Image (cartoon, rainbow, N blue to C red; front, top):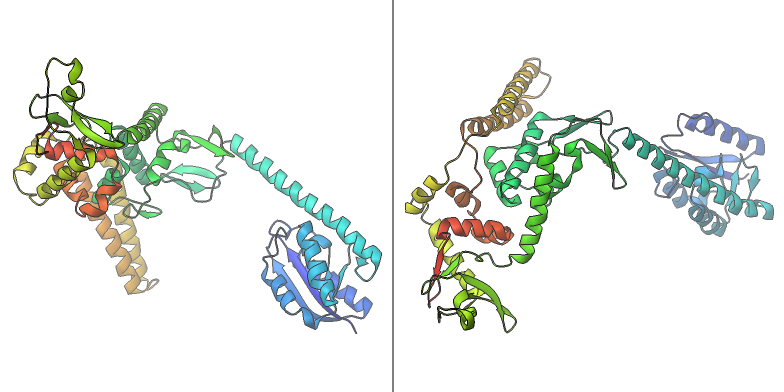
Length: 457
């Protein structure tokens, strides 16, 4: 008696279709075996798996036990695979090489006859054609949904939104952070500084806090047109049905700043540019190339042949002066409570532009969540240990939010506290800063006019 392995596959979309359900296939295949007087050795079922590849647990199990059977039986050829290449590989390389026949009851052929083997190749072509048609229909459906303004991107929505029924819904607490990112970026803040500000305020999103955020996240937020009410598919943008968080003018300003920042970063390779002045003649020190290396040189000396004032002050390699500047900055950072702090606190008075309403609303929401957790504890619905950990987390977040409500936010220039906080671990942070950020920190700590003498700075 022939030993038969029955293989059944249904994809998610096919489970509801008549004739393709697991039960329907199993009933017909067992009846077929009885009519042929074959013994059913085992039934292998892959529920909810696509036929586009062979990465299916039941199929792998069948192949592992292939020595124990004589026939592989399926309801229809495309149940085995929708890929022509995979179908022929399974039948010719796995089944026939091991003297295993393959039978499909719907197409009414098997590999015991030459005609059946020829039909396999023909039907495999049609199985793959159907798969390609399904892909094309799915693509057209996504394009149409995008044109209707529905979100068709990844299932994880962008920061600032929650995804409900394929529609982006504004998350007010996260939207506050998105608005602040655009505002700070337009006003000259770099990604590292924005991250530092958000960490101090205790901000977090559905994806966690900002402490370990990728440096690419903020530029991606700046460029994401979803924040002006649009949705995309295949790099095409359409008018969305969701509310925008950022107005078009702010969006354009931020993206212009991003492009300018990229251009400046390429050109501003040395952060002392524009800050150095000659101690002898008062002219600016400018960057130049000398024997293939970047140097700083007094402008009057560089153009001495056409200047009325002749200057003979020393020229320095860019690296040499920058190393001097870094040493001075490190020394100042050790004197946090000295006169430097008092001097620059006066220059960086801050104005209150914080959206206290949203922060207060979030604080109220935390109170509501804590009360709900207490109710669950009283009902013994959640273990005390888990309750206490969750309450402590919410309480810590509320404390940070309350500090943010009372404390005035940073202005367009970095405060001395920001600098000290940002550069706590100087060696780890300094090289990650953008050139513009290095220049601003240097100008605040060493001054906007750094004199260069024959000994350096």
